[in-house]
Length: 514
Ligand code: XMP
Image 1 (cartoon, protein in one colour):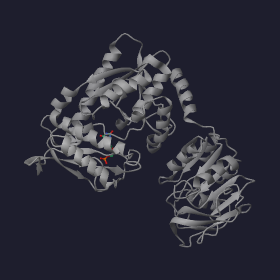
Image 2 (cartoon, protein in one colour):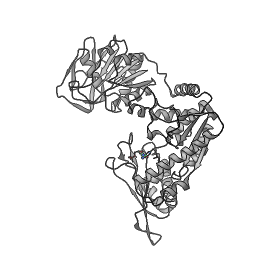
Image 3 (cartoon, helix red, strand yellow):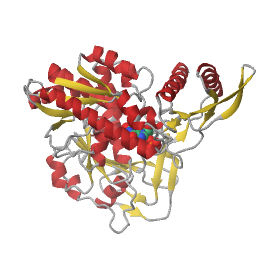
Image 4 (tube, protein in one colour):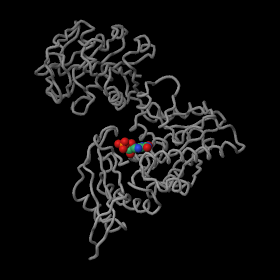
């Protein structure tokens, strides 16, 4: 395991992903963890991340120098680099010499461990206020910039390395290569970690954990729960039952996709609950977004619990486990990584009844999203499930501005299917994060179709690009693709006479309209 020591900001997660892209397993630990505890994990190497602090700041995170004396190879980046320089007796100046963004790096030791085979001049991404002016004793300086004399240093004997910039971001053109040089050449690691290993490891662990008891899993149609279920199914076969609640707010073809494609690919035992009537009845007359969300959430839990109770009530072996698709970023963000799972409500597809004691099976809790997709692919799940874009739990219920009715849902389903079809045909699926299609059911506008006046509803297209849905920008879709979607929707979907595009970033807008 490579430990990535997190000094704050978002860099650690990206570094951990990059290490895994180099096919070396990595885990994130907080910089506040005592060094003894880090070393007890027997890391093969340690990477010190960047962070928002200055080494001169009062209360800035520090590092016990024992970390550099344990014989474990260490690679410091940005703040981690400066901390390393300072701790080992180099000089870090608070000169006010700032560098932000793309910077030219001059490599002075082209044959060094870190830089071999990379160009003498390369673009790197900088973000710092302090600068290292003298490397610690025993280190050679292997690169500089116009502003910082020491932008990289290396000590092959002690296997300690550092760079002032951020090799993990894509703007550092040879960053991945430099990181891999550290891992393979500096630390002597072999690139042999694959998602295949994860599957074997998890299958064995789940079999051991479950024994001859049973597990249940709520399927939402999303990637995470599908891959988690497929993995557990591989481990324990018919001892797993999946529950899928069809609330009638799904998009066109989605329920069928779960019922047919997912079952065909995995052979999973699936209980589909048709609850459309129940949801529509509960939503009758409601147009307030929060109220809709509450109703959908509440009904969902009720239906899921009922299905669960039915499974438990049959006379099979004890149902002791609940499968959840919790991912590594959730684990890191909730301060964990080790220890027992804490149940966060937004991870539960159905929510847990209070008086039922389940043990959780979370086979994806060490994986990033792209790795989950790879595992899914390797398990033979169809592309349409594995590459699915995010879709909200409350479904189309929060994409109809106004009251939700069967009629309006059908209409929105048609418009949404057309938009998805055309975006896929134009090869844009990977480029956009997601594209909600929204029906403004409470708005009407005048139009003219077939020589007659119409008074119909607008459809909103909301294509966004994003990395994590926390922030987003509106996607600049090609005009001809927009034109095609608009023409088709207004021609093929009744009561729609206008298509508009949402050009608002997040913030201030959210991705969904409700
Ligand atoms: P907003 O609208 O808050 O959406 O910018 C951020 C991301 O979350 C998705 N979303 C949800 N996902 N249950 C979910 O599982 C929900 O209630 C929910 N609401 C929004 C949204 O599609 C976007 O990807």
